[in-house]
Length: 350
Image 1 (cartoon, rainbow, N blue to C red):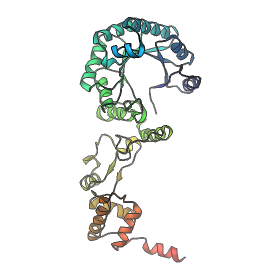
Image 2 (cartoon, one colour):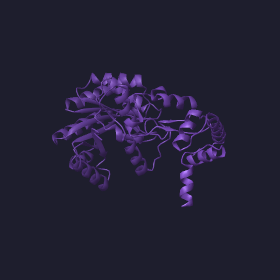
Image 3 (cartoon, rainbow, N blue to C red):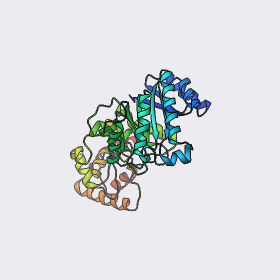
Image 4 (cartoon, rainbow, N blue to C red):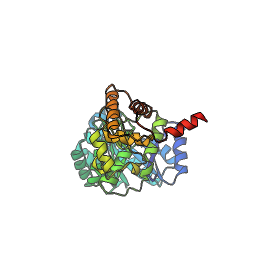
């Protein structure tokens, strides 16, 4: 699909994960990245896996240093620098993350980033590890980070408050070159910035050619949904099954006249490999009912459309799903003529 980097896994985690990262690195021309703590065995495993980019990370917030890493600030800086130097010595690109950056003392953040910059780091990743950033604050942090490093900037947003995609875009606005995303937003807790949301926001709202084949986004989403067994909510932006569905009579009538009336316009279902759908229910209007009836081979009069629409609304109000079979039953009960009725009778007699 043209994705720029695949962070394939944590090579030191297990033999199986090491093998999978190695296989992915060997199987694609896309840049493959391996993850590593600032620990010798992690870094060596990542180097041995054959990835081109190694992403080393260390906690930098006081709470994580004290209660997760059990290390001092000085030890964090020392390990970070040593890890970056080892990655560079091995001939791979180095990315460094100050984990929990958005809860890290800004002066210490500047200190550790300046230190890894001197060690030759290629990328600096700014992670909102607990999802507490807002777009304005995150953009300001990225601008501050730029003062302390010549490395390219990558951002990593979590969706605890539903702001991950917005924070990723704010990072881009502030000068970040890359954002870490996951298909369907899968990730720790409430998840990460969603691949499909960030790509389509960049393409459609910012006019950026990302190089990603957006027409396969829905296909990719369904594939990951099936493999992960994590359902995609129907109202999920871009890839949800309702993302391009219309039930409201006002909306449906407008879209039938011109899709731009009640869709973003700059993002069409065709752009992401999806289809527009008109859903029948308690909010349905006559335009949608007429369209569906005609698609099913009926030739309704205005009076018949109104009668079938009333039945659809009543049925939908009971939270029942109005399928094509149900619509056909309503049409027959209202004596709506069907163009192929005689053909069907001939087939039955034959």
